[in-house]
Image (tube, rainbow, N blue to C red; front, top):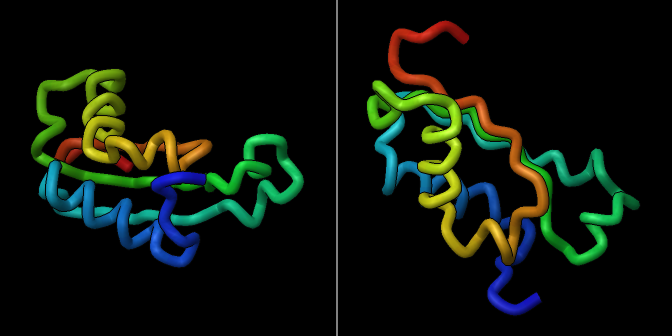
Length: 96
């Protein structure tokens, strides 16, 4: 797949993009691709990831706007490296 990163670099690349764009207070990125082996979306080499992020950038934004901010931060990786992305995005002080 053109532009795709090696699998072992994806979590770090996702983390770096989110840190650069959203300056999170807390960030956890988990590659769950192994749990989707054999899934049609995994056949093209893209991965399944979970992101749990707390950022002041989310203050005053609804859930859809927060997800859009994450997608924008990840840019082209959304088409080259990521098949599925579960996002938990919160502003500081919001419950887990």
